[in-house]
Amino acid sequence: MKHIVRLLSICAVVGVVCTSTVFSQSLNVTLNQDPFFGFYPTIGGSTKINESVDFTYYGIFWTSPALGGGTGGNLWTEFGVGANFRALDGKLEINPSLGTTHGRLQSVGTRGVPFEGIVPSVTANLNTESLEGQLYAGYYLALRERGNSQNNFLHYWLHAGYKISSLVSAGLHFETLNGTVIPRTGSSTTNRAYTWYGPYVQFTSKGGHTFRLTAGGAAFGPTSASESGEFYKMSLGIPFKF
Image (cartoon, rainbow, N blue to C red; front, side, top):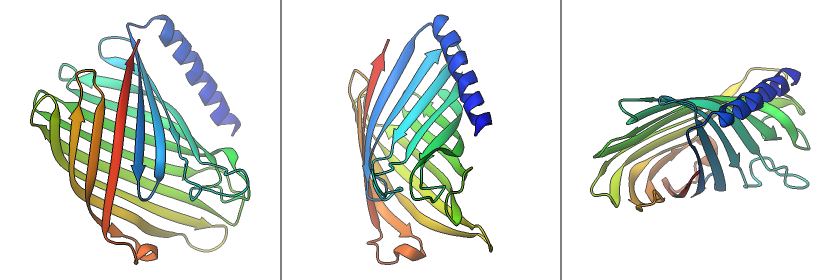
């Protein structure tokens, strides 16, 4: 854990240096809700270093008690930093990040602990006059163990759409979450938590606010055989420029 603390300290110093030489800064607050994770606000910030690179940071407030639970909630918390690289005149952005998780979902203890896992991830965004899309892949690797096992997760999604007008866009969404349980003794097991697929519609204001509804079919893992086979997801994105 000492190595992670040192890494975050270095990232904080880099962030301060970047802030002192910035062109501009932005912050995006997104409110999300779906039937698996529940309600979870996310924060994403960026500081422009030069014409092609941004320093980025993010946080996710996982509010569902199911992601940990116990006395005081022990709510799962995620925080990370990264760098955003722009290409094709800003139409394509690729953002690798390194996140940290805090709680008891991965360490499987009775109480939440800091730095229970790390999350290497990459996000790619496409935004042209007529097309939009996003690819995300993140691996949640447990670092600490407080019970008889650890939990790792692989989470990825892809959505792509067409801009019908400056206000409305629509497209398709595909998303999968897999979980691996690593016991202290014995072999590990991997299960699919869900696979979602279906259309979405999004409304975008002149100020850049986005409101999206996604719904469709769902294939659930063996522990969720009684699920309806359908899903829904709603997101509200609120940008701030500085």
